Image (cartoon, rainbow, N blue to C red; front, side, top):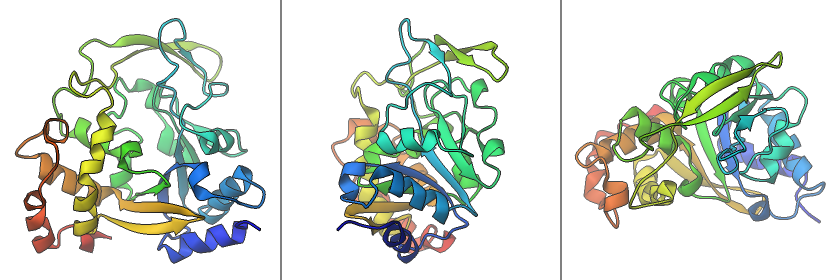
Length: 273
C-alpha cells in the first residue's frame, strides 16, 4: 500500500498550508515514495488542494536552451527539472510562462496574469518577474525532498540585491514561440560565477538561518522531508546576511550564526506569517 491522494492532501493541511495559498513547489518524486497512482496522483493532490489558491511549478529549460537549440516553444519544450513538472505543465488549465530558460507553470487564481510578460525578461530571475513576485503576493516555497540548492527564489533575491558575479557579462540570443506563431528575439544572460559553476549549491549555507528566524520550517509530504519557506522571510534574511558581504555564499565556507542572530531578537521574520 502507498499514500493515497487524500493522505497527501491531509499532509499539506497538517503542515500548515492553506488551500488559498500561493505556493511554488520544487520536488523529487523519488523522495516522496510509493503513491497509489504514482506521479499523476501527486499532481492531482496539489492541483485539487491549491485549486482556490495559485499553484506554481518550475518548468526550466536552461539545460537545453543553448547552441543550435535556441527556440523555446512552451507547448512542446520539456522541463529539465523533473518528472512532476512535466506532468503538471501538460495538464488542462495550466499556463506556462514564456521565459526561455526559467519558465514557470501556473494553475489556479489569476494564473495567466501571474506568469504574463516573462518573454520580456533578460535574466533568469529578473526583478519583478515570476520568482521575485512571490514575496509581493505573500507566497510560499515548498521544497519536497530537495534542499535550498533547488530553491530558485534565492536567485531572484540575489538579482534584486544586485549581487556581483552572478550573471554572464554577455547575453545569448534566444527565441520564444509566441501565441499566434511569431518568434520573439530575447537576449538572455545566464547564471555564472568563476569560482562556483553551480551557484545554487551554496544556498544550503542559509538553511539554519531560515529555521532560526522562522522564515522556514520542516514538514513531511509522503516520505519526503520538506522545507516550507515564507518568500518574504527568505528575502529579508538573505538580504540581512548578504548586506555586509554580498558574495559570502560563494566565498565563505559557512555563514556564522552571528550574521542572523539580531534578526531573531527583532522577531522581524517569524511574525510576518
